[in-house]
Image (tube, rainbow, N blue to C red; front, side, top):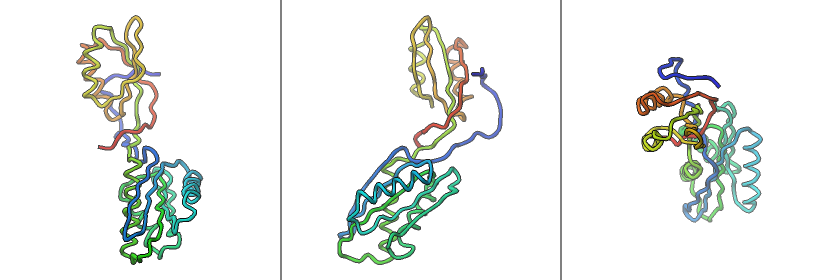
Length: 223
């Protein structure tokens, strides 16, 4: 654990990366064909393939289970498949959605139950694009951002004023403990740390103890 003071300077802050908050699914009908868009965060190619196998097992009777996935912050691994649909009408359009959203470490599967009406190449492209997009939206896109655990302590008379102010600040309050003083942890994006600490010093007339603890990547909703 090391002490930290507002006003420290350094290199350009790491803005983190976009990924998925959790699993999600959404379905829709196009010309009697039923499409289901699934999406899940993954940390490895093995996790992506496991998710794909899970969806395929769930929809063994489906006409197609097309997929696209990326692994690595820089999308070093990118895989996709049309799963029997005409070449270039499913997997690649899905990958283009993922790349446009700049979401890494994710796997999308779009399941199709053929309804008897041919959609044509353009129709399929639009359908699988939509399937991937709604799957990502259902899963929720978050920014994994370098986040500092700021360990704090203040006197009781300052607590109400501080908690009211924290509601308007880009922080997450964790683990308040009430002993001889109030100790608590604030999770703060590294890029916001200096500004937050300056506000805390001003708010408490410098009557706050702050220690900067570990930095980890944590999810924050995209703005």
